Length: 393
Image (cartoon, rainbow, N blue to C red; front, side, top):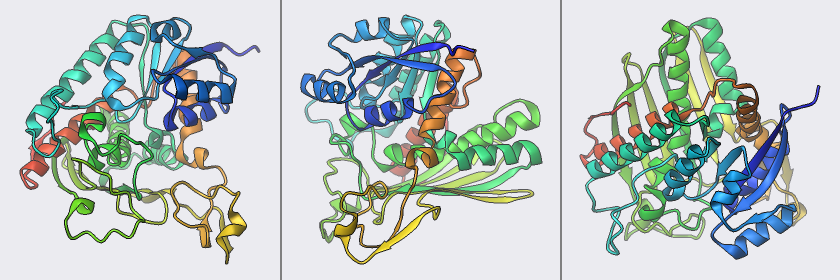
């Protein structure tokens, strides 16, 4: 049977746009035709499209009109207007994480260290509301591109919950590494926060998602996050920090370490860590402790393939794994990093949803819960860890 053709439009030309393009090559449920890409940076757009034989678009509306699904692979400060523009034209929108946020008041002197975090929560919730209102009036849907949701380990844990009908009692997990790829990361006015936002959104999304799954299995209603206690720290900005050149240190007004303690509506909890202070590659994991089983979800690194070399230059032309500082000694090689991380499964699920109207696992409601929790966490950190209620839309 001939597969349905879905036209894709990519907005952006950086790191996220590249792995979205790569993941689209592994979509098998539908036939994907990439209409082209748009970026306000003409030079980077030309570099991105010419390397992939794509059509460059110099007008965003023209790309939206030419596509069925828009991939928003741009800094989070730009997400809201792009998402709303696409939804107004009844297009589906795949939105990279973080979903949205608060990016300052536009003044030259804005500083992420100094503004009231209550303002940040209010403005972030206003942004979420605008996007969800646009979605409710559109034939298109918001697809929240949180790859952790589609990582094989997390999806297998979903199956365990559905078949065992277990209660999740507590979870703990982490995303950490030595610093972001993004040149704008570390400046609040572009990134909307630091480690809690850029790193914490991943394990937090997975934890909230699994509680959503548990609630739907039990009575058809997701179990939502209720309160958060959080602390943040800017370790690499301390006067006494010993910089040996291994960690990124270009953070302007954001934290590089965060701890989150989330309590859900049913009284169960999740403890999560997010940081830029970990060497040895990406450290992505979530442990789920339930009433009848315990699961460790190791996304990065995992020991599916390990290799040793006494000399770095032996592996000079070999990709090992994201963000490893050295290839000398033992390495946990990821034979298919996109698969373990859920990028391919995520894209196939989104295109299957667009083609066959299947429910979206990682949707706008999940994205809203994540952002509401993060910005409530910033209020808690501002109050030195005091418990803060999470507003739920």
